[in-house]
Figure (cartoon, rainbow, N blue to C red):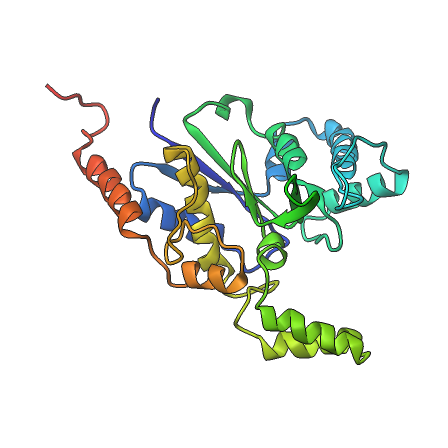
Length: 285
C-alpha cells in the first residue's frame, strides 16, 4: 500500500467549517499522509460529467436522496417510492450549495452508498481516505431500543460527518431537558427554548458555532484512525478520539483537546516513521 491520501469534501452551507484548517491540522498531526481540501462532493462529481448530463444526474440523485429519508424513526426503514414533492425538494437542495436541511433524517448507511457512487473511480483503492461533510442529519437503526438515533459521524468508505449531527446527536446537559419540559408545561413553547439556549450558551455546540472547526479536528482524526488502526474511538474522555454522547463531552474532548498517552504514542511512532522515510526517488541501500 502506498502513501495514504486524505480527501476532505467541504460543506458550503456551513460557513464556520474551515476545511483548509482541518487539512493543516491533519498534516501536522500525521505527517506520513497527504491531505487536500476539496469542494462539495456533488460539485466535483458534476465537473466530471458533460454539462448536458448535469440535469439528469441531479434528478437521479434527488430521487436517491429522497428515498434515503427516514419517515418513521421508530420503525426500521423499508424501501419506498418517494413522492414527487420529496424528489423536487431534493433536486432544489442539490442545485443550491447554500441550502440547509432542517427537520429531515436520512439513513446514514444509505447516504454512504450514495456518496460512494460520487467518488472518482481511480480513488476507490485502500490508499485513499474520503471524508465527506454534509449538513444533512443522518442516523442509524439501533436494535437495542428499536429506533433510529441521530449520529454526528459514520466511519467507513467514505466516512461521513454531519455538521447538523454534531448539534443534534450528542445530548445537551440534563438540566436543559428538565427545564424544557417545565417551560412546555407553562406554555412557553418556542420562547422557552430560546431562553434556554441563551441560558446554556457555551455548554453545547450550536449551528454556525465558531468552535465547529476545532471540534471537527477530532472527528476527521477519528475517520483517519479508523483507516490507520481499524478503531476510531478511545475510552479516555480527554482524548480527541473519544466517542462522545453528550455535548459537554464533545467540548471536553475537542475544544483545545489533545490525545491520550496511548494514542499520542501511536502518533509519535507515525511521525518518527515519517522522519525515517527516504526522500522520494531514493531507496535504502
